[in-house]
Image (tube, rainbow, N blue to C red):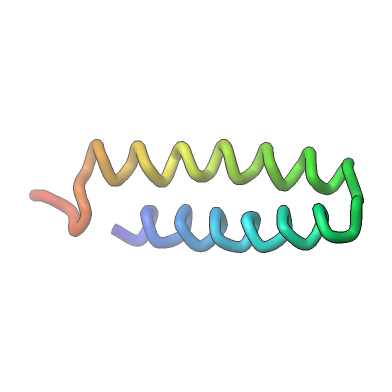
Length: 57
């Protein structure tokens, strides 16, 4: 369960970073923020699908 929470928090922070970098037109930051959102978002979704939320024993 803590893994899902950590992945979710990282994903949310990167979404905020993505929006801010789009506003500032910093395209290198957009690239890295989008990549991080994609990877950690995928990990978050797949961890919830695989292990359930709350964790199924």
